[in-house]
Length: 340
Ligand code: BYC
Image (cartoon, rainbow, N blue to C red; front, side, top):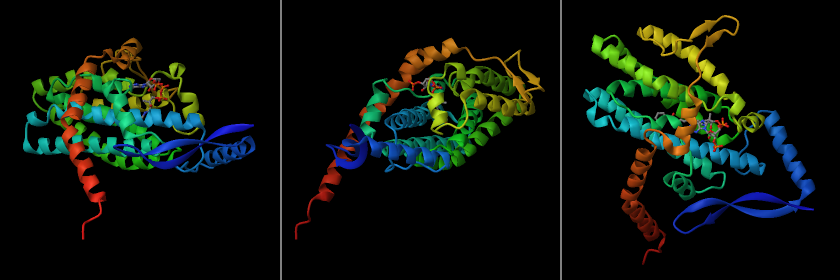
């Protein structure tokens, strides 16, 4: 019996050079050997690399997660980018500019990691721009005040790190290595957010109220970033089995709450949750779940800013058409033989 087997080859495509999948046929016995090798590598905690054989569903799972992660970084530039021109000092403007630029860089590493699995940048961008692809729910909430910039850095980047520290040990080599660099930068982002919140929380009563208001609005959307509860997370089983994720959505959410409550207390602010209570037996806080109906609505495209975000990304893409054309023309010129 013949079974499909995927090899990665470099194929030149119109407008773009991308890794593309070619299906070949190899005997079933050989597939079993490859599968055993793949399982053995996972069991030994070794990385799976782009040229290694991998089950088709593992490849698809990674393309889904990594491309969504990349889109989140790119769309995530918008809520904070909105404040660059209104930052209250030159220092805060420089810091924010650097942070937003880092997020763009994260998106690019991640698109490259996903390309190594056989998808192309064009396919991924098309999925984002047409609204087919998901990106993190959190970026469909508006940044209404300067305190929101602090809350995003502190809470959103804080939650992202919690998840990404785990992903540094993800089984797919290019994803794991991208995470190592990204985590270093995210930790600067988290600190800049917390520094901003510290200034406001220890500032005038009006500034403190602004910080509390931002915390009130960002707390539950941040808890949603970790994904649905484990009981409703269809992808977790495979993700854990294949060591793409090493911990579940609920485990990471719990760790985030445990860590962040202490930071809220230091700021003299209040977590907007009447049910928040230390639970000695589980060595962690009990806390209220976010509104999962709201979460589902946001990821379906009906959040406060979904339409605005996609419109902004489409505009940026269209405005950049001349850059892509110029780069392609220059590439073509370079590839032509030089006349003697
Ligand atoms: N938002 O089975 P589940 C940043 C979807 S950006 C939207 O638990 P999984 C930053 C999920 O995709 C960093 N959708 O899935 C940037 C799935 O739908 P599909 C963002 C969500 O994959 C700029 C369905 O719900 N971090 O730091 O096992 C400025 C069922 O979920 C969300 C990442 O992207 C969500 N929150 O677990 C500042 C981390 N949650 O695909 C900061 C990488 C779930 O089956 N991603 N869904 O149609 C992950 O770790 C995992 O994909 C998730 C979800 C934990 C997000």
